[in-house]
Length: 75
Image (cartoon, rainbow, N blue to C red; front, side):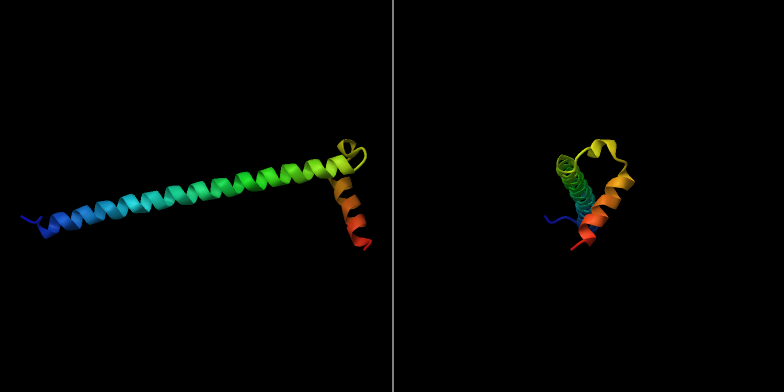
């Protein structure tokens, strides 16, 4: 015997809710993965810059920024 329509409707509502929750979880994971990738990229690029700029660890962020701006504007 088939299930009554109201029961089928309730089952579908439950499935919809579960799928919406799965979607939210996947979006959160995607955002977290993107943040991790960005953080990793920024750290790696910062390390590259520090290895190429003499005494970079002694310079302020503003000094590094000014140096890079001067170098990049010389083109």
